[in-house]
Structure formats: C-alpha cells, structure tokens
Length: 157
Image 1 (cartoon, rainbow, N blue to C red):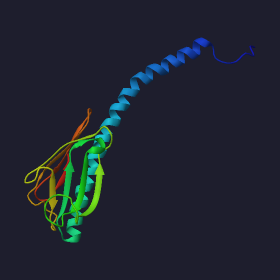
Image 2 (image 1 turned 180 degrees about the vertical axis):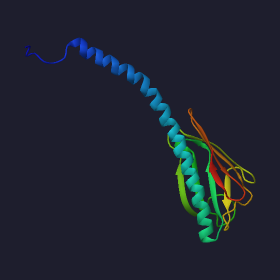
Image 3 (image 1 turned 135 degrees about the vertical axis):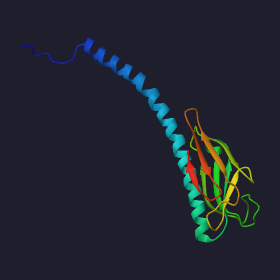
Image 4 (image 1 turned 120 degrees about the horizontal axis):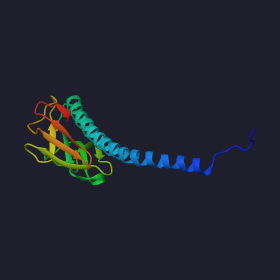
C-alpha cells in the first residue's frame, strides 16, 4: 500500500486546462447576457416611471409630464414632474416627482412623441394629451422600445 497521497503535476495541469476552456466559453456568454439584462432593466425603469406618472396624474387630478434627455449612461435621463407653468419643460416652480438615469453602457437612443419631441404628458384621466410615441433604449446586445399610446397604454417591446 502506497502512503503517498495527492495529485500529480499532470493531473493538476489537466484540470487547470479544462477550467480554462470552460471559462473561455462561458465568460463571453455571461457578458452578452449581462448586457441584455441592463437594457431590460433600463426599459423596466422607464416603464415604471411612466406608470407612476400616469397614476400620479389620476390621484392628484393634474397633468404630469415625463421629459426624456437622450444620451449614453448617466447623461441619459428622464424626469417625472408636475408642470405648474405649462411650458412642457422642467423649471423653477415645477414639482419633481422622480428622476432617473440610464445604467452604464446603456443608451437612451431616442424619445419620439407627437406634439413635443422628447416628452409626454398624462392628464387627470390617465390619458396622454396627444403625445403618444416611443422611447428606445439600446446597447450593443439589445434594443428595447417602450411604447405609449394616446389612451395612456404603456408597453415594452
């Protein structure tokens, strides 16, 4: 009976080689999955902000605006606010309800609404005031669209 126990150098090198091959296959797939999830998360954030704006408009019996600033990463923002002076822009006197930014690596490519280019508004009945349109969020792996229709319906494509 041999009392020497342990692994030979050849066995250790073989296991390390197998681990390297598995890692080389798994890591790129994981990165792609993570990038797709970032876009999905950003789209859900915007969807939630739009739903919140709609519900706030109904609860407070007032118009609530959602203003988008396209861009990349933290420079891409959206703001939900009560437009007190009615100028469709966030300014002094307006009441901010929420504010959000896109995660790193995610672009708020466009916010295209009829009437005003980068904002929509919900009235006290939860309807958009003619500004239906699409918000597009993207990165190198995926594109998601958040669609708002005239009757206040919101969905993610």
